[in-house]
Length: 411
Image (tube, rainbow, N blue to C red; front, side, top):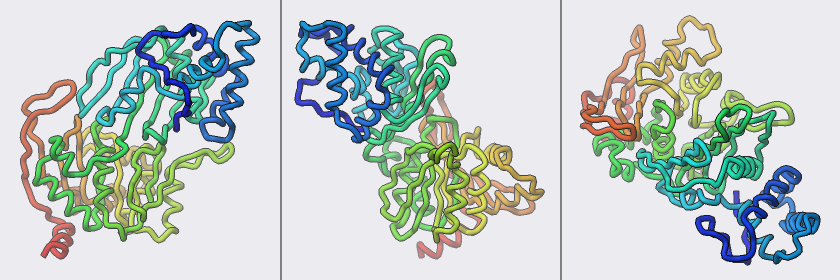
């Protein structure tokens, strides 16, 4: 999403107006445009229409409501800034250290930095203003939200954000918005180690794993740091490897020019699913696949790719390393008897994350059953709602085929 650039002074949402323009009038105009000209907002945002068309609608509204006393030029400027910015959230949108912005209700906002949550000292004026703001953000980024479709999820490509909004009637106590942000410049492994996501020994292991064709799954709950780590790992893949990156929402933004990035999208009335993207990739002479988040039957194609000796990387919501296997089985649309053998021979490494920390790294191999060789474990000494404190312990060395592969690369 790109901001509309105006030659007027930008509105400061944190301060009262010092002109003869009422905030109530600005809100009235914005509400009118959202309800009557939603498609025009999208067309302007995607540069398929001129902003001048919206300017004309603003002037027409002022004339129809007989508000002749206001400076038309200033009103247009205020409305455009209101509609194509992020208002009181803008400073957190601009802050590259903020990873999450959660607005549970109009007067309660929480932000997250480095895995730490804090209450933001801001609030919207009332429920109506916040609901209109929610609708505006969804519409502006190509989504649909109304009383019939009261939940929407969109992506803002410019700021690299995933935005999730729910309004009435689905929400009982008012609208809510969740914004997941990704840095415009992703963290590399050294930066993540300096932020204590892992220690130096783990960093060395991760770098070695990315040089060889290892097959890695990162698991944990939402917002545990899985995507942040995956982005850093993708950065380490040699430029000669041809990868297909498949996502439901664009979040990874790999910089490697040898990567093909695809996302789920609607094709007429049909939705292109993740499993179709992965399956079609089998015809593209790829070295590897990355699925930003495994959420359903695409697990089948993901494991098939690993079983056919492609490199695979992805993330999954799971309670831990060992719990990842039954979680994957529950998502696979298959009745094969030897499914555990299939998975065990398709994965090399499972990484479990919690609260922006790598808690466990385990090697996976199959010997009559799925076996786990714990390479590293974080011994938790203290846990708060937002962080973990403790020590990293390295318990074992690689045992399976990866050991020989690394040995050949690092003579």
